[in-house]
Each structure stands twice: as C-alpha cells, then as structure tokens.
Length: 265
Image 1 (cartoon, one colour):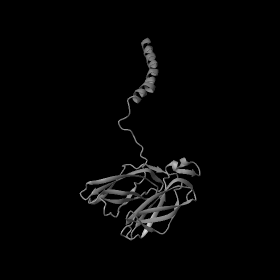
Image 2: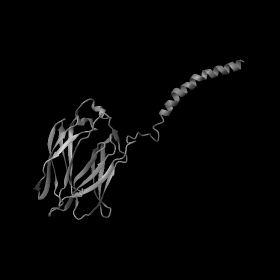
Image 3: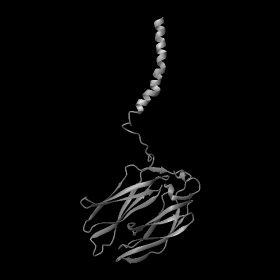
Image 4: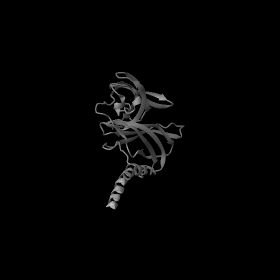
C-alpha cells in the first residue's frame, strides 16, 4: 500500500511539471525555431475581378528631316470592372519589340486605377533609332493586383469638364494640336492633385493623339482651365475625350473631407 501511495504522490507531483512544459517550455522552443518555410499571405485582390487591358494604341510623331530617331506615344486603355475596389499603385512596363521579336526599348509607368472606371495610361515621346521597324508592344504588369475596397458611404471623385475649340500651332517645325478646356470639382472632396488626360479619336475610334496635364489643387466647386497638346496627325480628329481624375486612395491627396479621411480605406 505504501508503494501505491508513493506512486500516486509522484504522479500528482509530476502534473505541475508537465503543465509547465506544455504551457511555457514547448511553446518557447516552437517560437525560437525560426520562421516557417511557407508563410501564409493575405491576398487583398481576393474576390475582385482583374483589371482589363482593353486596347493598346501607338501614335507616331512626324519625323523631322534632320532627325536620326523616330518618336511615338503609346496609350493603354484600362477598365476596372470592380465598382467599389481600386488600386493605389499600379506599375506597368511597356515593352516595344521589333518585327523579329527583339526588344527595342522598354518604358516604366506607374499609375492608379479607380473603381469601375475606364482610364487611359500613356507613355509619351518614346524614341528609338530611325529605320527600326516596330512590330508589337507587350504590357507587363504585376502578377497580383492589390485592391483597396472603398466603404459604401464614400463617393468616388466627381469632375465635370468642358472643351473649347481646338487650335493648331507650329513648334520646332512640327504642327501641333492645342486643346484647352475647363475642369470643375463637383465632388464632396477637396483634392490636392487633379490631373486631366485626353485622347483624340478618328472617325473609326482609333487613338490619333494623346495629352496629359496637372491642374494642381482643386477645391469643391472650384474650376480651372487646362491646356493639352499633341503632334497633329494626318487623320482628322472626330472626337476628343478628356478625363479628369485623382488618386482617391492617397490620404495626402485629400485637402479636406467631410468626416475622417481614414474612411477612404
């Protein structure tokens, strides 16, 4: 009986030791083993449809007689099918290839993508040696799009624009189209940095000109004139589409807001 009692005493005495092992020692050893080989990641784009590249257009510039290079603009038309989610930083890389598939040059461009919007992204004045024939353009983007969802009570930026008559001028021996207009902030946000991008279309809807400019700070109800220009095409302009926009996802871009700017996130 004494042996049995001693065994019971030893068993009960061991319980606190075992508990300490499971509560303190083993977790400490597990934590000190270093990071796991595979770390789980949260994908902000989960549940969001990918951004669509609907069209890539090339707008060649007139070649001057004394020039040894040819210059062009490249325009990508993007569409974000997500009505309440966009991307704050959207890096792109335009890769120009010759007719044999060799790389001519590449140009990086970072933009943003607003929810539910059609947007144009342009790289301007891309030059390469005269005589090199352009084959195609590849658009390289990140494999994962980091979407940010807007709360339901936050409105998207709202602007109205009005275009004046176009003019033509000669600059450096090249005929250029000058398009002026007015943009007005009709949203409930005061914006620090507002930009305007415009594309000129021919009768078939093809892009034959592109320009972009910044109008700077624009308060609610305020309007400001802007000027855009691009080299004149041999084709007649049928329509000019001007799109004012701003990056709603950057809090430093908000001058004033009714409520808390952190609600944008």
